[in-house]
Amino acid sequence: MAEGVLKEVELALPMVSGMEIEASNAATAIADSIRMNPDRIDEVRLALVEACINALEYSHASDGEVYLTFQVLGKTEPEKLRIIVHDNGVGFSPDDVEEPKIEDKIKSPDRKRGWGLKIIQGLMDEVEIHSGADGTTVVMSKMR
Image (cartoon, rainbow, N blue to C red; front, side, top):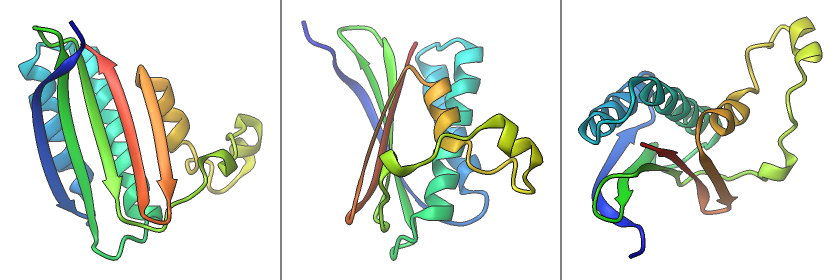
């Protein structure tokens, strides 16, 4: 039997300071509901916060919204949490994003900047980024 969507929750949040906290709270509630390990929940929360902040800072979405879809996946029991973060912004080329180099960042006044995608990829089990003129979609998954 193929993995299917057992539960789905959709949210649209205004791109304002603090919206990443609301997104994180929703992720926590859903992850708790499938009995995800607390350490894994923390990883999901941090990855989602990074994705939301990236949308807020870089998307320039004319509608000023970020769209979140939380999907609980599994055959009969929850096995995975998939989170889709979408904006209707200007898009970017993921291949053109420079990999941050720690030795350069240490000397830089913006040393805390530029780590978002790397953090997301390090925390989640699966990450896909689709971006173009119609916006950016980050699809990230974490096994329960």
